[in-house]
Image (tube, rainbow over all chains, first blue to last red; front, top):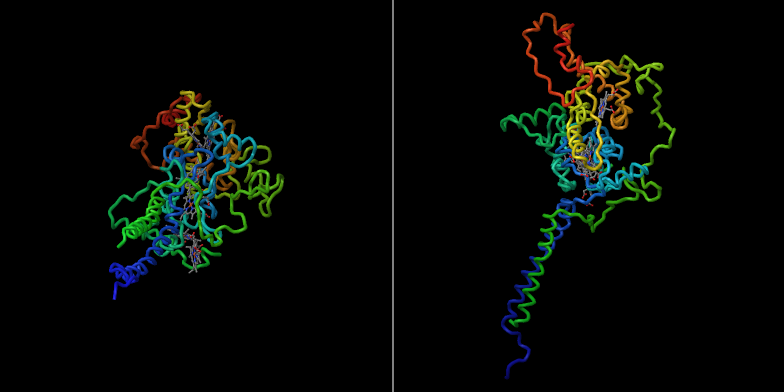
Length: 221
Length: 248
């Protein structure tokens, strides 16, 4: 008997265990790539589109210290915080930096009565309902959901705004609560010992009787 | 093992590292381009949300402004005292019936004043807010055609003595170079601001008779008033309230 022409070489013995190993690892790999790749932490967090006007929160809300509610004046009354109308900017900019090239789009809008085409940064899906006034008046600060906007030249999305993220806080809101009069003070921090801080959070939870709902119909209505 | 196969295997393994690497960079960088959601799941439905754009209308707004001259149901308010600060043809000198002047109202007014007025008029109302200071610098440096009129000190005689209806009207419709805040501040809050402005003015011109009975004036400590950048026309009676209090 001569040598069999079709005998597999010795290294092919590795193929079977190799294939089994791959079959076990591949699903994990796919799950990882899909879970991380499609998570809002990847697709949405860090979104910071350039706007038609180089408007800076760092300058207006940070350096000049204008309160958020000067511009987002519906945030305490309604579901929407609202982007301010041109008139709000023009309270100051009819005079300040009157001829600035950076404000060209603003002047156009003012003269023609057309809106400035700001690009939306935070955007929940159409089937989810969110309400600013329910949070802001209960002592949840803008900083919990939007980060230090007063330090951003361009607004950037800081939180995933996913259902899991909403529920994390709705299940345990205590640490995000503060005196409702300090909600727009993004740089606010508690002065006192750790125990006092815990008491402070508990106080506001009890005081306002805060118990966020986890019913589906709260956010899907 | 044939070399060829080994290389293919190695390249394959390296290729598998590419998606995680892309994901990692995507997570750690600021994104400027529009978001991509591969699985749409009814994220965007066929309706318009607040402040969305709609090409159908010439001005591009999906939210339609009310037709001029129309009033929404239940929104008609023809009480001139409440919404205009007018009684007959004169500025009102009293608060309208809808407003209860209480300590709470004044606190509300303080809170609103600090949001809407403080940037220009300053915390104590002397017309020295941060916007004034910045604008003043820009005018001096001649940047971008900036012009500026100093916000009035609310402690000027003419403003202290004006009827409250007129102050209310200033907030609602503005005066000269100051824009109106009627669209930004609801009517009740505007009256609250008026109440606070009155309290602020009184605080700078307190009389002996304002002190609780039995207080010995000479025992009180007075804080120095902040210095004003430009003394106003009514200097004689406005800059030093202590003097005035002493005269009376």
